[in-house]
Amino acid sequence: METSELAARLSAWIKEKVEEAGRKGVVFGLSGGIDSAVVAGLAKRAFPHNSLGVIMPCHSLPQDAEHARLVAERFDLPVREIILDEAYDALLSTLRAAEPSSPKELALANIKPRLRMITLYYLATQHDYLVLGTGNKSELTVGYFTKYGDAGVDLLPLGNLVKEQVRALARYLGVPEAVIAKAPSAGLWEGQTDEAEMGLTYAELDRYILTGEGRPEVIGRIQAMRQKSEHKRRLPPVPDF
Image (tube, rainbow, N blue to C red):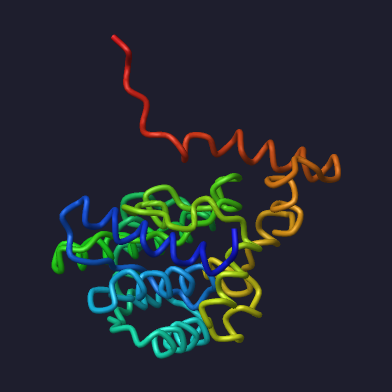
């Protein structure tokens, strides 16, 4: 499918799903990364007057918010900038009082996307919007997302696209080059990158998803990650009795 056709179909899909739900528009996080930038571009096409981007720094690098603002300017999007540093600190202080053992790095990191999920749903309710997620097929395949965090959304327009397809859409939509060129990162801690955390490159992951091919050690890692994260892709189990 041509990239232009894909962009048109995804924008139409977003509009259709929102209207089916009886809502007025969409809200989404603007992280300064390529996935959220593509979602922003698609959302603006679907709802030119009812798309809201939300910049949510949480002890984040200043560059992330700068890139998010670049995207908002490029697509002429209204934005809310909500700094979550104090909310994070207050919640962590409360948790540490109840659980005095030293917190694991991942436990600390996952607070951030879950606070962002709460923020997005607050605004969605305020505006009668649906929440758009920014996860892509590459991340969904291996469970590289936070359960009830960035996975806590209403629609996943990029959910069937691997990372390279997202990059192609970014170029077509006119996402700023600084955003396209930066190393993908969830912004969970300073210096964190997706590929370093996953232990494989997006090129390797995309190749396996699209063709089933790859080096044995890469295939083994992808399959192990997928199995370990299976619970993230399913609704909570309910007894069948």
